[in-house]
Amino acid sequence: MDANAVSEVAGRLLQAYETGKPIPPIIDDHPAATVTDAYHIQQEQVRAWTAQGEIVKGHKVGLSSAAMQEQMGVDQPDYGHLLSGMFHLEHQPIPMARFLQPRIEPEVAFVLGRQLTGPGVTVADAARAVEFVLPALEIVDSRIQDWTISIVDTIADNASSGGVVLGSKPTPLSAVDLRLTGCTLHKSGELVATGAGGAVLGSPLNALVWLANTLGPLGIGLEPGHVVLPGSMTRAFPVLPGETVVATMAELGTVTAVFDTPE
Image (cartoon, rainbow, N blue to C red):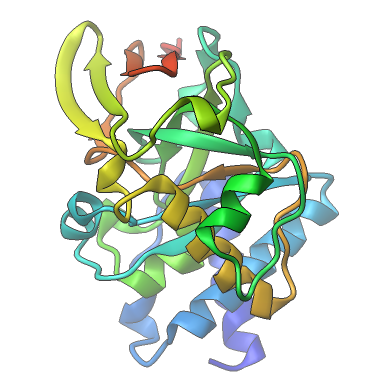
């Protein structure tokens, strides 16, 4: 895709946020678009958001579990940017009006204490960079009609990012084996899924390594204080107005997302 096509698609995605109306799959009009093209579209939107005052507060790794890859029909992870306006306080009403087709998934959030820049990052490097972990709920969303996405569509759409709710109990990485960390997910009191950290590339730390080594050659480092979401422990579930979602993670505690009911 040339620069004009990249800008045109980025503009349509940005407009979808404003209008609340999703757009047709990008690959319908650009069947030859590549993953590299998709990341250029994503970066174009990030530049627009930061120009409006948003701050990059971290990154997410998407599609890092077999369950999510199967659900979305893709075969590789991707990454997106977490902007300051995406973070919501737990137990506080989250405005449904800002989302188009929201789904929710439980994750462990890494909070970095030092810079982490690839290539060449190892699991040991990643572990040393993590200050603590938190239980988290990621709200994924799609500006593509009916979630009909290819890997190009989701990457271009900022890895289908929507929002983040962080729990309030920091835990040192050394105090927990994330591979074995179990999780239950309840929606309005009903158990809808169980999972474990090992579903995320064998360990959520592997997703952090993948992210650092993928971003490094692009000149992007993970900074102290950044939040990294490594991927979901379960499949994603649609959320409706008025619902409360609770993820409980062994040794990490709980995190609760409450969605408002628009008048």
